[in-house]
Length: 122
Image (cartoon, rainbow, N blue to C red; front, top):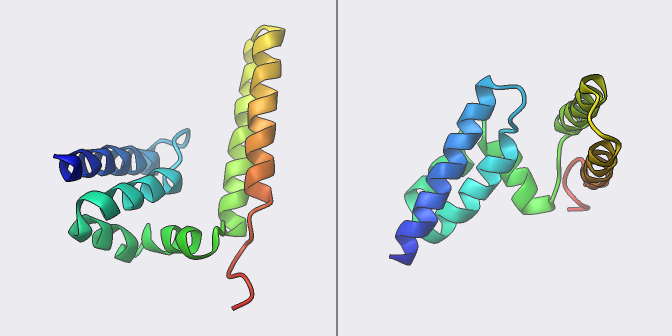
């Protein structure tokens, strides 16, 4: 039963990742990382598919092996977060909502920008 729950979580995460391919507001790679993690506990075959996939595999492997995010993906992430903040300002969200959004997005941006770009000294 536990394996089934992990596999189900992986399927949901992978589905959200696939939705992210067509919706610019949804990230793809973070969901595929979660999917690979969950599949690792529930379905070795689906994990293998995830990490060997020609599109999803390289960023997932880069994250698992080195905690790395490519410069291109960092740029997409930070631009997306800045766009989200700009949208909140444009919509005239209340000051508390904007402050909360700025704190969360600022922290997330800092995390993304401080990850390595590639392999660590191998």
